[in-house]
Every structure is written in C-alpha cells, then in structure tokens.
Length: 176
Image (tube, rainbow, N blue to C red; front, side):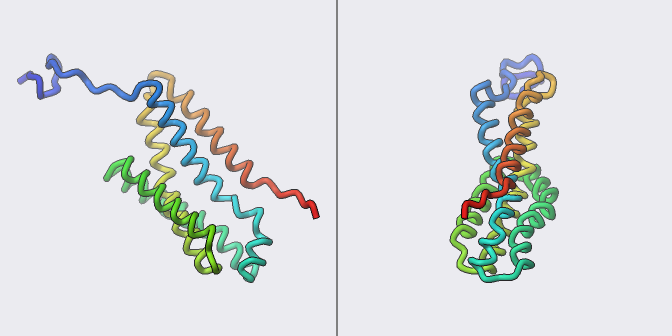
C-alpha cells in the first residue's frame, strides 16, 4: 500500500535529504576541532616532562605514566566505545565524549598531585576514545562517497590531525 505516511515509492512524502553545504562545512569544522584536540593531547605533554617532574616531585617513570596513560586509555577503548556510539547514536556519544574530555582536561590543568593528574589523563583518554571513532563516522555519513565531496572533506580533517600532531610535539626553545 502506497500512501503519504509509508515513505514507499510513489508516495507524496519527499525523501529526506542530507545536510546542505553550509551545514556540512559547520559539521566538518566541528569534527576537525574535536579531532585536533584529541590528537594534540596524545603528544602535548612530551615537551613538559621536566616541568611535570619538578611540579609533582615525581620520578621519570611516573612522568611517563602521566603522559602515556592517556594513549593507553584511548587505544584500549577506541573500538568498544565506537561500537557503543554506533548502537546508541553518534551525537549523544560525541557530546558525552566532549564533556568527559573537557572536564578531564580542566581537572588535569589544576591537578594538585600526580595521582589526580594520572586519573584526569586516563579520563581524558576515555573521552578521546568516545570522540575519535564518532568523528570518523560522522565524516563518512555526512559526506556521500559517490559525490566526491568526501575526498574534499577528508583533506582538511587529515591536515588538522597532522598539524595538531606536529605542533604539539615540537620541542621548546631554551632561552635561559
């Protein structure tokens, strides 16, 4: 039976269309910013190793845990949390991931001890694991493969990742 509410061929209900060019551009910018923050947090503390050791009065081993626990949490939970995002919705998972990631980074910025910093970095890795697979899924669903637009969308996303990685791992110049 073909009618206005069935959505079958021949019905008077128009097929839903994807986002227009302006919405796609906004989506791409938001996804690139989120992905840049996630990637920058992977290597951002490498330049601060001496400062972390002095600030928290900890060994180099503890400093390495502070740096690497983020990546460990991200890598361990990337696939499971991507599957959760596919099951329960991309937007709620992205928003939750951004909230967890943002709160963890605020806590890390004001951490009074190495233990709090470790917990905050681990929570940041969990938030990043919620964000990263969803951003890639959003790109593939927002930019259709057949139109060639996906290729032009993936270019800025990959440049954003490369730029954030290069900028966050750049050594500091010593001026003393």
